[in-house]
Amino acid sequence: MEFESNLLFTDGLPNKDIGYRGASAAAAAGITYRQLDYWDRTGLAVPSIQGATGSGSQRLYSFRDILVLKLVKRLLDTGVSLQQIRVAVEQLAVAGISDLSNTTLMSDGARVYLCTSQDEVIDLLGQGQGVFGIAIGRVLREVEATLVDFAAEEAKVHDELAARRALKIS
Picture 1: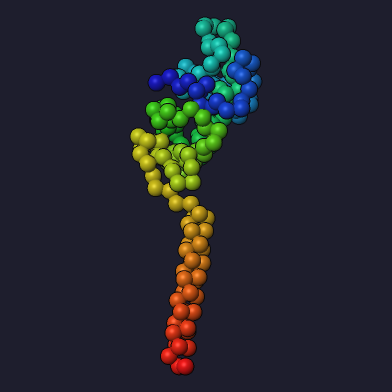
Picture 2: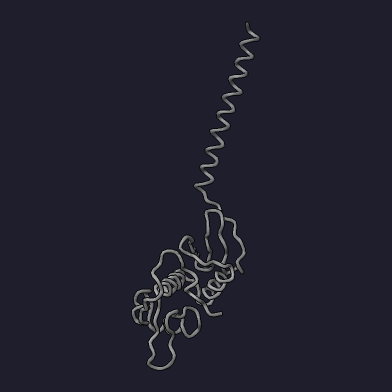
């Protein structure tokens, strides 16, 4: 499946009419030109402005394309294999994720997870299977609020018991 990087980033990014040559795109993404060439030839991250059409032709990458290249590089740096990155990218497309500017990708070196909110984490290598996520800070605030409510309720019950005892004594 050819990865169309221009579909992933849509909010507030520069227009894709500015093209960056392969060497500049590779340097900006922190990869070698050889990696750039391989990823293009295998369809992982292809230039959206102008692809290579033969010997001597110039690839032109958009800002969005370079973001994708950098994302792939970061995943490689965490230990995720190129095969797994391909699966993750395909799952992003299948899931209809069109804007990653408000999402977070996490990896433990073996899996890639997409966090779309505090409560939702999707395992991109597990065919988009949902993973249960727990935002500990949010749970902590919920427990605190519940305990405050319990304390208020307990104080109310204590006050009622004290009032009944006072009535029995008098």
